[in-house]
Image (cartoon, rainbow, N blue to C red; front, side, top):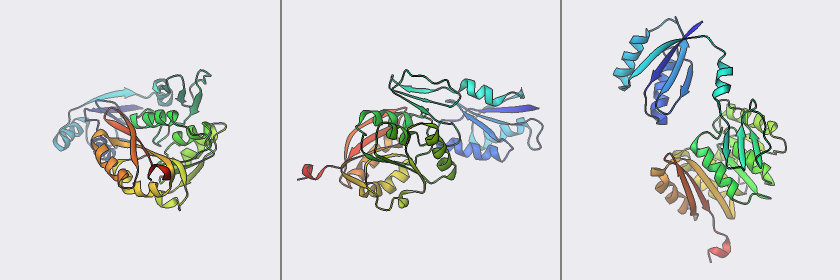
Length: 282
């Protein structure tokens, strides 16, 4: 079996790539790989439908993007993907690896995360920055909430760092199942993985809330997070661009929180807010 590879030179914006993936899905493409300057799409060669040249022309007319095609032979795709899939490290403190990587005792924490379809393998700048922030704050004995938990990588790290209670919440069933699988993979991690959203919290209180979602959901749910945060607690958020920081900060400060610090990488931001203790507001 041979496969058609289509390489489309598309901007690395999430919205544009989602539009293109939806379009290509209707043309028989069912495998996709994102690179910095392009999107790679795959389908079996000889499938009914438009020819490669016709697809390229429609992409040019519809989206204005240039593209290229190639025919590649069938291969052991899983083996090739595993060879190219890298682990993620933060200094000598944290390593996030897949089950097929060899373990190492060179790090204080080593998390095993199965890279399925859930967000949060630590390769994206938002997850890396959230992990880095989480490593910098005291967690031992705290109650931690991970909203939009995806793979549950943040929740697992919080648990292994000594949090007394960790709850991971995601509204996607695939992520929920993947989160439970990853918790089971990491010995010593104790995380309650919940299928739901902010309305699922039911007034539960936390010392630290982690939310790596997206701008619109964060702006909508910041008041809910505030109501679930104890005085003196912290809210760490990511999933938005540097240009959105002003709106995020305004929404958080409207609830009484204050910005302690933020980091940015590739225009993505992770921000640490705190809710002042009662003595600080007097």
